[in-house]
Amino acid sequence: MKKTLICLLLALMLPCLSLADRGTVTIIEGEEKSAPELPLAGYKIGIDPGHQLHGDNSREPVAPGSSETKAKVATGTSGVYTHKAEHETNLEIALLLRDLLVDMGAEVLMTRETADVNISNVERATMMNEWGADAVVRLHCNGSTDHSVHGMGMYVRKTGEKAEESEALARCLLSAMTARTGAKAQGVYKRDTYSGLTWSQVPSVLVEMGYMTNPDEDRKLNDPDYQVLIVLGIADGLTEYLTHR
Ligand SMILES: [Zn+2]
Image 1 (cartoon, protein in one colour):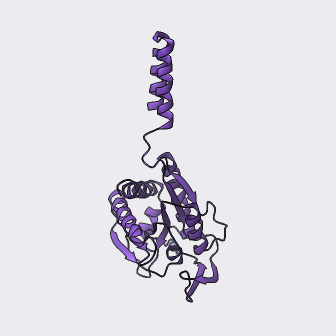
Image 2 (cartoon, rainbow, N blue to C red):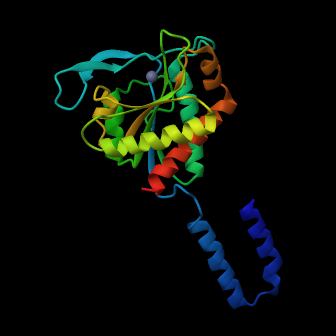
Image 3 (tube, rainbow, N blue to C red):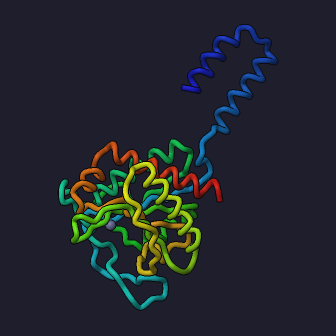
């Protein structure tokens, strides 16, 4: 809208301007293009839509140098109301988030943009390390045998590289996401047992967006309007963390 107005004004003004003035107008127009007021311009944000079409039960170390191992990619949960697989919901929301962050000026790298891939959690973390992400959000939905449990929770590494930064990012995300959606804030949990976090060398948060085992939250997580609120919350949290550090 702003760009259209500027073009319209320029079209109206140009006939009245001298050549020198036209030069000035061109520079102003150039500045408008090269330095737009985009809040996330210059930031590299990684998005990892959790899981994939098929889990991979072969093993990889829980942390660099650890003898303890875990599955490369778990299957994930599924919706008790929608009957959707978690990997589908995660990807839907991730694609919305990608588009919003790009519109806000960020450079975005996705670990996957389709379901039928096989990328382990260590590989996902390594991808972001090599790319040099300023922040990584790993999108997941939670599951519980207790179907009354609902709410959003953030998981970060407890110790090691970028642990403090990751916790700061998690607090920004939890506060912004629950403000936008009205979801219950469960908290920020520190664990050194998630390979996608312990292999990360950049600020990285595993975002549990809600419980697909809770019928109401499952319905919301798969509702396009609610998905927009989720990505707006994530964008708010990322902007707060990246620009107010
Ligand atoms: Zn998950």
